[in-house]
Image (cartoon, rainbow, N blue to C red; front, side):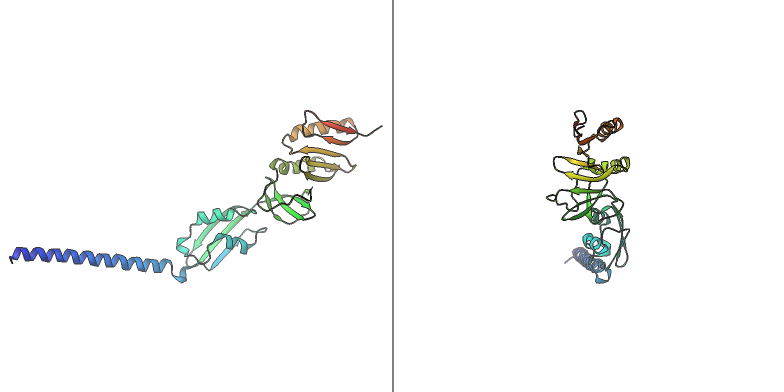
Length: 239
C-alpha cells in the first residue's frame, strides 16, 4: 500500500471519528439541557397572586396552569391570556422568577350593579359582564325574573348595564326600584308605584328626555312604555 493511500485512509478515519465524537457531544449536551430545564429544582412551586379581591388566589393559580412546570419554559403571555378568561379579571401580567416562582398581577373588573332574584345575587360590571356571585351595598340593585339564572362570564345587555348609573343618579329622589324582564327590558319603578319601561335602553338619552318632559308637566301616570321613544305609550291616572 502506498504511503499516499495510507495517509488518505487515516484522514478519512479521523474525519469519521471526529464527526462521531461531535454527535456524541451534541447528544450529551441535549441530555444535560433537558435535565437542566426539566429538573425538579426548577419546577414552579410558588405562585403569588396580587391585586385580587373578587377572584380567589387559589383559583387564579390553578387556572394559570404553571404549577409543576419548568420555570424556564413558562410562556408568560399565554398564561396571561388564560387568566384573563376568568370573569372577574380584566388584565393580567405574569412574570417567572428563577428558580421556582411565578408572580401574577391582576386588574379586576369593577362591579357596577347587583342583579338579584330568588336564586341569588350577581355582580355585573359597567359593560354587562357577570363577574361572579355576591352583593355590594351602594350599587344599583336590579331585580330579575326568577326564570333568569345568570352565570359568571355571561353578559346582560351592555346598554342596560351602562344605563343603570345614569338613571339612579338622575332619579335618585324618585326611584324605588329597578327590574329587568324579558320583553319589558329595564323597568324603573318610582316610589309612587309608577313603572317606566325602557327596553334595552339603547336610546337612553331620547327616552329620558320624554320622561323628563312628562314629569315637568306634572302629568300623573301609572305606566309609561318608552321602549320606542318616538311612540311613547302612557297609562294615566283617572281624574
